[in-house]
Length: 281
Image (spheres, one colour):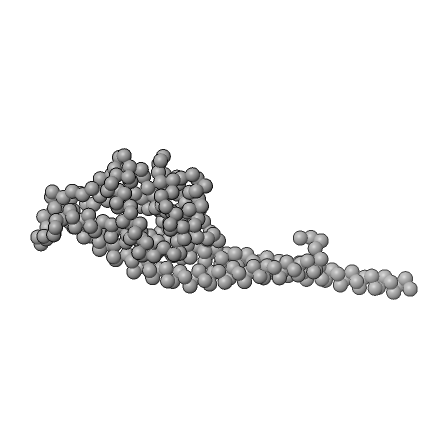
């Protein structure tokens, strides 16, 4: 930046101050949204944990139990539900989960993307997209999660889908968000069989009840993963914007120093010229 006039440096300072205001505002918005997303993630966990416990109990206490949800379909195509964000400026949040899922994809796999970044990424990779109806992650509701779960469960039962997996980002802490994948179907239930402590009669039957619970369980898992991913995105964006704000502060300080030096140099030069002119006269 050597050789810049004081006016040019001053314009750069104003530009950087405007950028700092934007990054600071985005940091505050992300922090506000993070609290709400964390609360949703925590409140959603007990629901599908209870459903899973119920399914495990049904399978564990019935020696003749069998369900199509427990067996993969070798002729069906693998399907991945991938949750990413709608915008960037969130550090490595989007890139980390999308690269992880793509690295694990089998040949001929299809994807159900949630979030604009996921749709754009898999479109560029020429991966088969089942539907783009959920291209905006911010507008996906709990009802949409159950709709997706019902569609996936039906596709698994009719043999169209062979294996269902979920890619999302697990919220660990403000500074740590871990991209991960989870196999949704076939379900892995405890193999051990124990006689029930209290005989339970299921109507119309244990398998029918189990099969009815599975789509509800999948919907709960999807909603929980969506909440975890949303919290992770906001945490990542808050961290990224905090870092950008600090960098902007450092640049502004450096520009101010350069401005003061340039101004001092200009004043010194003017004094020198005045003194030289007075000596000649």
